[in-house]
Image (cartoon, rainbow, N blue to C red; front, side, top):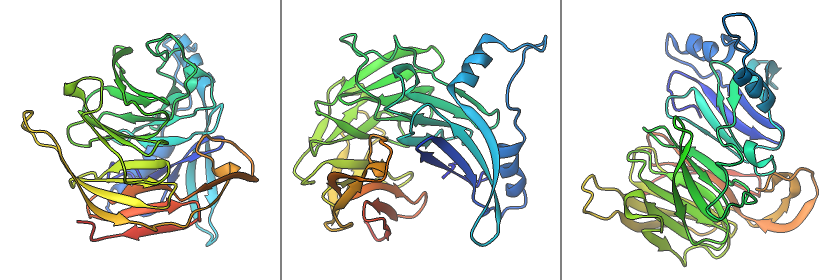
Length: 333
């Protein structure tokens, strides 16, 4: 969901790219016009003063294709959609806090285009990471991107590969820090919504690694023994001191996670809720694979809870599972 309360738009990661969909839920006097402006008033391409396309414009056009659609729902309501086509399936999509930019991660795309940043108001997409900048310390760029997140207040982009999280300065186009989680396969990454200096990664080896950017490249704390199988998703609550994780065992764990403004105090992390059987463990179809594989047959792999998201204001948690159910949990504190 777009974090700007005036923009009633959801972003959906798809097999062929990403969709920005108007929800039709605007209630404020100016909200419908602002939402419409975000999706319809942009130009499809930018020209220079001489009317000729610049090199940057040509690169942006090659990264993604934008097209506007009007889709009819089952109830006959017309919905505006911006469809953005990418070279490979988008595994994740996340908004910038201002609600105009969104970033997608596509592990199956070429290395330089696995992370793409989209600007809705201009209908522009660009890949900020070149082949050189996507390399790790060993010089290898063979590790696919697992996810990407914006910093809540600084021009930083957190990019998770299988074994590390790289922090890029978007303005300078530089790699500023690499976080080594010690995990064999990172599956998801979450950035603290207030400070931005705390990063949590979930992994296929059932671990949660909490990083404090001020304390170096290694995890400040590693949480083990909660999930019995691979962790699929992690998320911070936007305003409450809560952290949640979901795994292939069908379980969801909620932690009280307080980050103090005093840098001399370590974060307080306490488990408060265990949803042991939040979702049934069922066979995972290839079209639902976290790696972005396409198709409809069974992969021979079972999975439980695949994704989760907190309500922006209330202590409520939404979870989605391989059993095709979406659950809402409240009274988490």
